[in-house]
Length: 177
Image 1 (cartoon, rainbow, N blue to C red):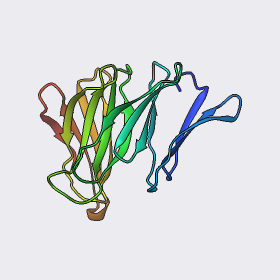
Image 2: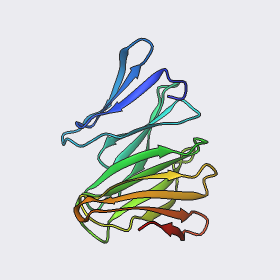
Image 3: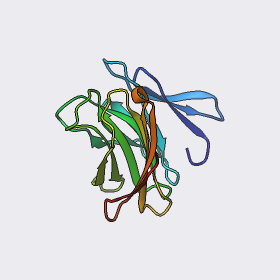
């Protein structure tokens, strides 16, 4: 958490444990699923909000002050999707969700979406340049929320790249070799 008093841990079984660090005790468990899959979590850097996967293609926002929870993002209906990474912007106004199809499908592919935390509206979505089921990656916003950087890993083909996108134009600014 922003003040360091809480720790969230995402486990492979889909559960997310919220811990009270000074008290060294488990506070709450979120999620869990019939199908094992890794859980992902991110704390807002400015508010007591926790974004966490609650199912393979659902991200829930937990307001730890009020105890309220709401679905922030749901993956496309078609195909099996999995969230691979979550990250808040530095000002806490946006959440970047990196998700992808669990099967190689060029029409679905991997994508990073930027979601407005207040409105739960997707502001933009960018497809990742690889479409491989072993693909993993992450995405982060620049401090001014104007650029999106994607780290891309196509381990099966030993390809690792970083892509930077201008969010105002949607154009790629650069891609490493």
